Amino acid sequence: MIAFVAGTRPEFIKIAPVVEALKRRGAPLSIVHTGQHYSYALDAIFFEELGLPKPSSNLEVGSGEAAHQLGTIIIRSAEALSKLRPRWVVVQGDTNSVLGGALAAYKLGVPIAHLEAGLRSDDWDMPEEANRVLAGRVAALHLCPTDLQLERLRRENIVRGVHVVGNTIVDAALMNADRARERSKVIERLGLVGKRYALVTLHRPSNVDSEERLTAVMRALGAVAKHHGLSLVFPIHPRTQATIRRMADGSRFSESPFITTEPVGYLDFLRLLADAQLTLTDSGGVQEEACTLRVPCVTLRSNTERPETVTVGANLLCDSTVPGVLEGVVETMLSRARTWANPFGDGRAGDRVADLLLDPKTRRTPSGAP
Ligand code: UD1
Ligand code: UDP
Figure 1 (cartoon, rainbow, N blue to C red):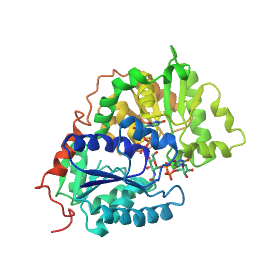
Figure 2 (figure 1 turned 90 degrees about the vertical axis):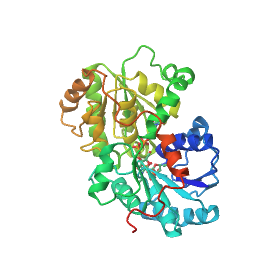
Figure 3 (figure 1 turned 135 degrees about the horizontal axis):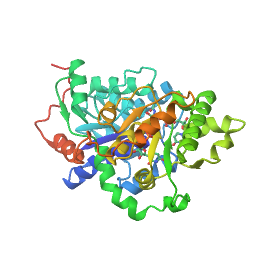
């Protein structure tokens, strides 16, 4: 049996193609849900829309201080995994659920497959950098989206069990793009018919935890909207909402040019992204999806662990809120031809991962072990 430990929105989206591929092969599997995300809009909606099986357990760790959250994930996922006794534990990405699930599996002696392995921002102020590096150190199977991560892992002396498989976000986006066009009514619901808009997402602590920084970013976005004649469609992550609620004048962020909403489901998000002039985001997954759907992207950060998106011409970085700077970067992206090649694969990553997990020849000891 193959167990997935997952707990947040992007993990649910990105494990779905692997779960599908295992189901097609008749392989038994189980999802251990850490409960890191629990609001309907960040959790259950993705199980419904992506047809994910009901988790075998929900550890209900909830939100809280990072070390406490991580410790609880380790303890509770170890309990769940020792009952399941899986052949593999699969973790995806770089969240606290990933590191907690990986450490629990490692201590139980269960081999770990790390999906989206080898990404690096070299920014240790981001909690995700420690999570992905440390999870990678204990993994046996490293499933890299592109050659760049294979090379990066090689530089860190991780050479065994490393495979380039593509990113399962491509599978997910391509599998659901038509469904999104057919089923989602989000364009009508948000009054966007005939409107030119940019899709905005923000949730990185460095952008949203301080009122000053969030205000500066929103002001810069407002200036972009005015300069380029765009509305700004903004599904607000709860982390960002919490800061906006603390602000005395937070309600101005729901006024024009902003069109705000709760976080939306995957089909609505894909529909919004596909019809946008561009996306302005600090999300990892959105950079990849925009690249896949050929929607220009400006990443509101000073670095990215997805540099392929910049190299192919799909993305530019900008963390400046100095007046005029973001307008110029957006201008460049809006004038680019949307013809770049997708570096993240052909949409068959899920099949490749499933084949590796089910192949008895796949090495199951941590890469550092002799
Ligand atoms: C987490 C991940 C981040 C990932 C993001 C995806 C870590 C360290 N961070 O960040 O890498 O990009 O998920 O969205 O693992 N909250 C709710 N409902 C929920 C979940 C959270 O209201 O279902 C609120 C709580 O107030 C919580 C805050 O959002 O304190 C932040 O949640 P948390 O899971 O700690 O971090 P994210 O910012 O979501
Ligand atoms: N997403 C969504 N609804 C939203 C915002 C994002 O379905 O309102 C999806 C988006 O399609 C992408 C993923 O969530 O696949 C990105 O998650 P997030 O930005 O929370 O995390 P990150 O990728 O930065 O870890």
